[in-house]
Every structure is written in structure tokens, then in C-alpha cells.
Length: 422
Image 1 (tube, rainbow, N blue to C red):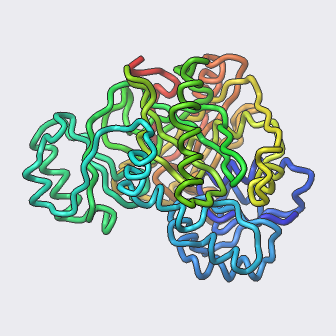
Image 2 (cartoon, rainbow, N blue to C red):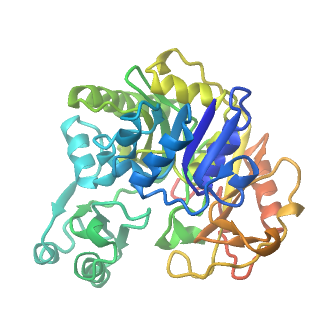
């Protein structure tokens, strides 16, 4: 089969890397791709994943047997609908289902309507009304831009001054554009955060192995939110009892809710969870593989990823056997100086050829320079991913190899794999 992957980050590299292992895949095309993806796929340089018209035309030209859409923006803009209209199967939810990530208020309504545990919340569209409700649920005050903001639209304001500043930036300065025209205020849930990614089609919702992400830029979960500075799988906080609670309180009612609401979801549902004293509660839904959760989770997948993708597009997920390795995986992200704020691109990367065998370096933001030199081309640049028989072994191997890779301004967290709040 020929597969077209839409996107060019670490998530898409992990997907391409895993698909390349399938004996049934004879060609992978990626638009736009990156320097790492180019090792396993033909990249369409200059392509813009968010230009859904151009992406649909590319699919028509390439005539793939399957399209896999990685990022959230083209999903929210309806790329699945455009490509399916051309008769090409797509792994990724349609525009209607993609509102589960594109609108936090839409997701809140869904969760409340179907009795799925989540934080108390209130939605605001007027800045003055929000300012008059400062400290609604106490502090820290959780403020979420309603729309897509590249994983950075959430602010935990420690006090009234920080809350006022965040509100002015979101709704006054519009630092997140239209995404901040509506703001969801939530109570701050206390506990350990973890993620569950699920394959979903009309026949089943099947959870993958658990993962834990690290959103803050600095060690000990300090500093502003990022797209994710690292992850590990499986989560150390998951137990048999907790898995049962998640299945009964969240997964089963979510799938039932999809059916009841007429949401024909086909793809990956990412569920962000907080393990509170009252049990697991949903923080967010995403409509695609998480980044960098995918890098850890897919390293542990033993089944053929293509078989799973095709089964989902054909509503055969309930009959698809999916197996996982017992090994542990840890992914540490290397980021550009200044990220998640402004950063420079074009820094030469050295040491990629010095990593040990068995270590996979997923490229998140890279490109080729002159003479084939690999350069930085994003905020998060690389995801150094290791596996081991134990969590500690995988973590040690990841950090031993992170230190072998350098570029000007490179920085990373030193505590990926440490559990906070347990």
C-alpha cells in the first residue's frame, strides 16, 4: 500500500517510522515532512499541512491507498471530509468530530451531558464579565483558550494579578488569535496527570498503553506550558483498579456518548486525565496522536500499525488484535532556546550519528541545510527515545544519548520520568 502522511513533526515521524516496518507498505509520502522523516519517506517540500485545499489536491495527485492526518489544525478544518469525498480512505476524524479538540467548550458540554467526570467550569465570551469573575474557583485559576493554540492555550494563574494579565493577553491582546475569543475557566484539579490514547471507530474504542507527558518547560513542572517536553510509557501511576475506573467511568460512557450524539469518530482519541482523590477526571480531549506521547507509545507497539489504521477506516477495530511490548519507553525532547516563546531556526545539529544502537531520535522540527547538514526548524527539535526492561533503564539510556546531541541553545528537562504529585 501507498500511504500519505499529513504533517511534519515528531508525531508524524513516529507514525512514518512504525509504518515503514510494515511489509504491506511499499511507499510512504509525507507532506511536508522533515529531515528525519525523509529517512523513511518521500517528503513533499514546501507543502503546508494547514492548507487543506492544497492537501486534498495532493492526495488526488498522489493517489494513496490511505491518508493519515497527524496535526489537529487540518482535522479541525475538515481535511478528512475533503479527501474522503475523493474516495480515498482517511485515518483521522471528520470536521464534526474534530470539535472535541477545536472547542474546549464543546468538549465540556459533551462531558457534562454524558456524566463523564471532569472539572467544574464556566465559559466566558466577554472580557469584562470574566474580569469580574476573577478567582471563580479559587487559585490557581485555570484559564483555557477555547480554540486551538498549539498546546499552549492553558494558563494556571497563581493569583489575581496573574489571572488579570492572562485574561488581558487572551481576550484583549488576542495572543492566541480567535482561539482566545472564548475562554473556559475551570477549577484546578489536584493529582497526577496522565494520558490515554485510544483507537476509535464505529465498532469499538480500544485504549493503547498509557503514557505520561510533561507540559511545563522547566524541571519540577515549572514555567509556561509547551507542546510537551517529554513523555514515558506506561504511566507509573496506573494500576489495575485505576484502569478499571477509567474504563467504566470514562471510556465506556465516551464511546456511548459518541453513538448517542451521532459522532462518527474514526481515528485516535487522546484523553488527558488527572488522577484526583475522587478518581480519574478528564482534562481534555484531542483528536489525534499526542506529541510526544506517540514517540513513547509507538515504540512499544508490536502489531502492524497499518493493519490497525485500515481496520479503523473499515469499522473493523473490534476484530483487530493489538499487542504491546512489556518494555518501558522514555522520550526526552530537545528544544530551541527561547521556546515556548520566540526562538531562532537554522542551528546546525551535531551528534545525531553518535547515538547508541536501539535509540530512536524522532525529528520534531528539523530541515536540511547546505550539503545535507541537518538544521533546527522548530521550537521542539528532537525527541530522543529509548526502551528498556525497566523504567529506570529506559530513562538512563535516553539521557545518556541526549547528552550526545548538541546545537546552539539546546535545552531539555532533566526530570522526564519522575512522578510529581503522587
